[in-house]
Length: 152
Picture 1 (cartoon, one colour):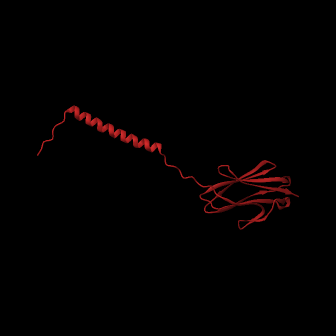
Picture 2 (spheres, rainbow, N blue to C red):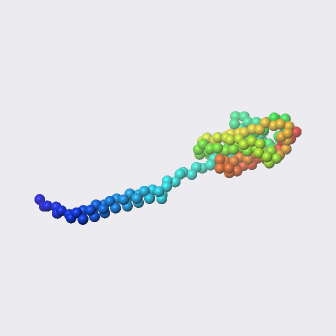
Picture 3 (cartoon, rainbow, N blue to C red):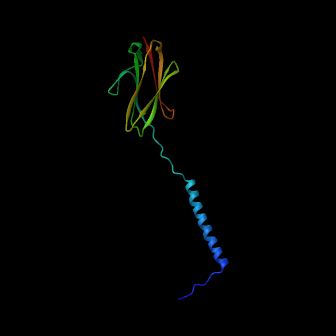
């Protein structure tokens, strides 16, 4: 059997230091690479508005008697909205304005794969005049504006 030559203590220490240094550089570069390339979060698609109408009533989740002028005698008016597709649970708002003054901000939850929803406003004699409903998404992006009037 051949004998393994003994190293001098100074060479052993240098070899050990080089091994430690290489290990530290390798570990640091792995950590740096992880910090520099973060995992990209998936970008969610917003729901797609396919129908929006003002109407006198809602039956079986469908608008009844869509119009742009409503009689105060109805007592209530409805804003209907339908979305398809809806990729994930999402929030939209129906913002009701009377003569450019915000009267109501109704939060609606949409669920996949498609969803219809509505909001309504009870009418009083003082509510005659021009109205609008703005349908906006959770990022405050305007999807649609519906204009209508309340009359005698």
